[in-house]
View: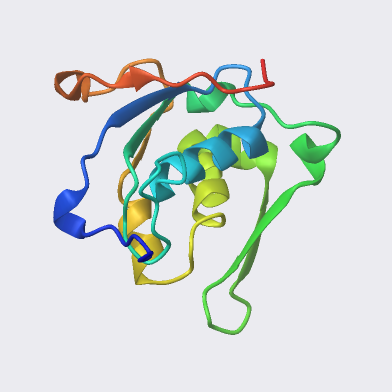
Length: 146
């Protein structure tokens, strides 16, 4: 018996809509990463982009558990002396609420060219509106949350 390997031309992509209102950040990111990688499909192949497009709305209403609202820190460095920056989760949600979800999902994807291609299929919006109505996205219900 031969091992099945998906070909890029054989893949059909769907659009999924995830409502982040009241959802926990980590659980939402796991669901989005699995859809972007294509792990919900029987023809999943680790080295081929078999995933679907994911739209996340209401990103400004995502929650975290415990004291992560104040204690969770996002760190970056510009590469220059004194270029270290640190921002808390609550400050990031005020400044750019879509970035928290994008950072969480990007960390769960492969850290290579394939992961970059999969990440480009993620669309995150702070409010309930999005410009992808023409693609007829299917509403994806998160399990064990809300």
